[in-house]
Amino acid sequence: MSRNYKIRDQEKPYFVTFTVINWIDVFVRREYKDIIVESLNYCINNKGLEVYAWCLMTSHVHLIVGTKGENKLEGILRDVKRHTSKSVLKAIEENLQESRKEWLLWMFERAGKRNPNNTTYQFWQQSSHPIELSTNFIIDQKANYIHNNPCEAGIVTRPEDYLYSSAIDYSGGKGLVEIIHI
Image (cartoon, rainbow, N blue to C red):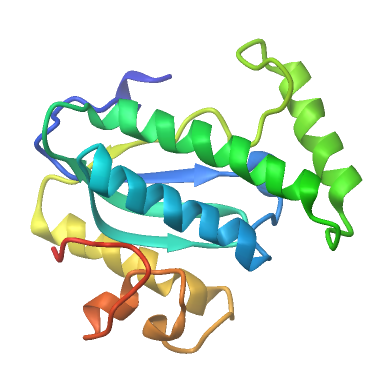
């Protein structure tokens, strides 16, 4: 990993992106999306993760996150990626309605065999490219980018209408993940 993509200051918020290998559209079923939501909320409640903004798209998730307490942010993010990859892969394997099951598992297995860091499957791309957010201007810019992602993709016309995002929290509603307003 490049020196530019390291978490240096545990006190700062970071913009991170988890991307499915080959940008595969996995998060098209609610049961797969809910694994991400549950994992984020678990880490918020049990590991000191602070989520300021988030959005789950079909092939990736964007987050503005920080940490409080003794757990380092890179460790929490590693755990989120590890847990969600195992859980989503298991959900795909067990889903009788998953028409792409064989192809998806083959793609993840193929990627896993090409990466010596894995034993069987690789679900997420290796790095999450953390970017330190040092000013309010940059934080607002990244939050707007995150919240407008579903609009840019043509999924919704207003950011707050997308269920798997914190945009609803910033428009006066209550979203799925416990966020801290910026």
